[in-house]
Image (cartoon, rainbow, N blue to C red; front, side):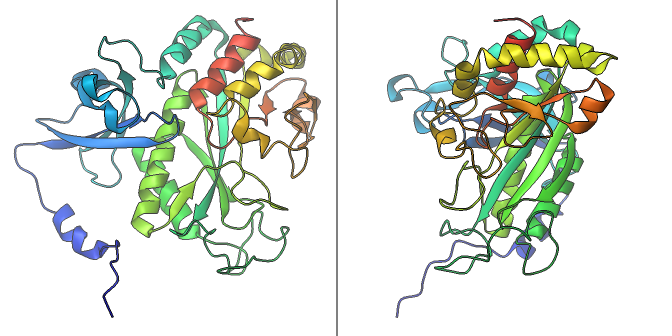
Length: 364
């Protein structure tokens, strides 16, 4: 019988090489970018002569855009513009992760570079000091795309005991979650917390509060780290908004949002005004809240499983079946923030935060 190929490697062997010292202060900088799907992440590494302290110290680079869905083969070079540095939790030391924008051959933003217009909107809304926090839900899968820890060819018990659960029969993949959490903290990402979600093998981490463009930058890098950590454990991190059909919760990226006016005394009136503006732009928000202009969210926003219907706008205090939830404490304090529950788990946070700011601050 032929030996089956196995793609996993022994990570203990790698440890020896990662502990080797480098000469002359040279460091490795991993450039990270969003690919042509608007969901996937790519990366490659270059050596630099010293530790960069700022993205501007890192050179413009390029890649083969015809292999990432971002260019034609006859004009395939796409530029990488450095925008934010993070510490590298895998190589550690002075090595860095570098988030980049993608630019076409003429140095204009690539079609999937939504950061560019988001940055423009955030700069115009600067005086409102928009703060965001995104609750990123995701699902751990085996390499056969079956949820991690689920019986092969079958299903676990019904939802109920898994949310914020503890115990071998209720929690699947905590090691991965803990590793990702520490990797984010080491990298300098503003990760705020984590918890097990309603569907078994589904988890959530929260990033924020972040101001303006910082939200998209930190969430994209946190996603990159999750994929990279999951790679080490031999599992898949999925951001599919409805990975399992049937009576199982989907996955979202609830966006908590406030401006300085909302956070001040009497801010509830400002929140209510923002919600009114959002109600009139429901279609535009739905189109911005997943990479396929609402088609992914159609599977998730059904009005069931703690969601609102994709077709209707609603808002309420402490209601998780609404489009917009006002937390109960906010209702009592008469100030604070709102929670937009519509963004899908695979949303582009640049598109989400830009749309919210354009609607509520710029009135566009």
